[in-house]
Image 1 (cartoon, rainbow over the protein chains, first blue to last red):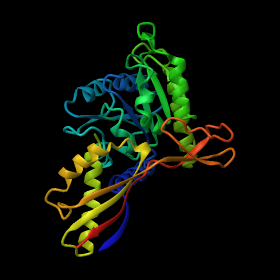
Image 2: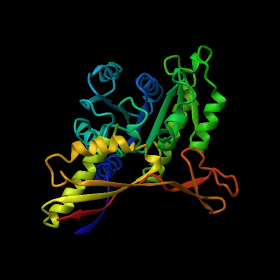
Image 3: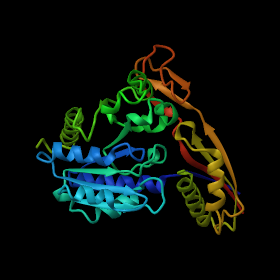
Image 4: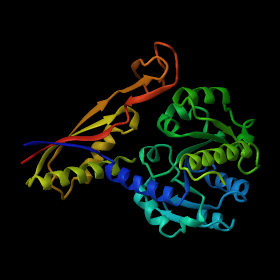
Amino acid sequence: MRIDVAKGILEKNDALAEGNRALFAAHGVFVVDLMASPGAGKTSTILATIDALRDRYRIAVIEGDIASSVDAEKIAAHGVPAVQINTGGACHLESDMIRRAVETLDLDEIDLLIIENVGNLVCPTDFDLGENAKIMILSVPEGHDKPYKYPGIFQVAEAVILNKHDTMSVFDFDEAEFRSVVASLNHDAPVFAMSATKGEGVEAWTTWLAARIEASRAAAGEGVS
Amino acid sequence: MHEMAICDGIVRASVETAQQAGAARINSIDVTIGELTEVVEDALRFAFDVARQGTLAEEATLNVTFLPARSRCHECSETFGHGRFDAQCPTCGSYLVEPVSGREMRIDAIDID
């Protein structure tokens, strides 16, 4: 006997993500899902973002890694609440992991929650966590051809950070070609050339992020802070 | 390799539907996957073999239909098929397009006894 199912395969994740989204909205928390390869500079980008925006927003971080708590310790040493999720081998974060991590945070004390996804250019793409914006980081040493090889992640990102821009002269990275391929995949996504550890280009990224947060608040009818 | 999580989703939802229908076993599961999802068929089938163990779907066949990418142009309303990289309107050249299909991950039907 054949019966119709007509269910999304990731329905459970999507439903939990919508629950997270409603929870974040109720507490006025703007959530960023930061995705990149291992070593692209996700943690450095978070630290630079904290330094730029900590006077304006109360920030917290969820760190996703297969194992260890070295990233959460780095963030906590910066004086910002940090929760470590160890996926124990899973290659991406899912919305129930976020829900459990959030239980340890006081959402009323947070304006901006940055989720550092597991280092991976494929798997985080299709998993909604309940975030407001997915942001993708590519670093110059990875090469300008990555959008050809991993188009999905460039398509779901609302903005792309091109990190380690200060190493451009060492690597054979064609920035014009990179920007052109990203534009063909995701026409509206801004690309921020940046060096998170040196500070170059950080302001353009954080100015964009702050404007995005304010637009989200205005849309939610909370006014601007 | 997020195919494992996808197969967990396929098996979980199929078994739930089969149990509600009072099924003794699931013979087959039909799923639709969009070509933009980066799901790899070999990895999906390997993960399915693992995920179905010890469930009503233990003997089930997985039938996969891959859907090509299509987008609708915001400028001229043309709907067109495209590959993974060239989501540009063939009629007016605009990149202001909205995906219509290609990101599906859906269980369509199951066959049960």
